[in-house]
Image (cartoon, helix red, strand yellow):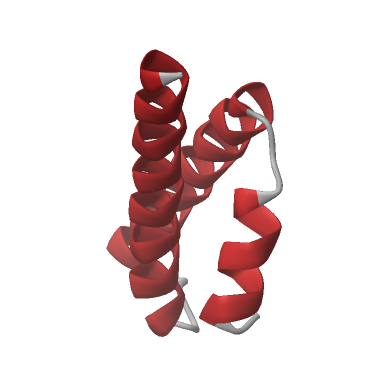
Length: 71
C-alpha cells in the first residue's frame, strides 16, 4: 500500500481505532522479528514498512491528542 494512501486511511480513523491499529502493527512487528530470527522471513522490507506505519500511527495519535486539548 502506498504511504499517501495509507496515511489518508489512518487519518480518517478515530483515536480508538488508531490504538487498535497500533496493537496490530506491534504484533506484526513481533512476528516479523521472530521469523527473521528463525530464518523464515522472505520479505525483509516488510519490517521497515511496519516500523514506519507504527511511527505514522503514533504521530497521528499525538496530533489528535493535541487538537483535542486545544479546542
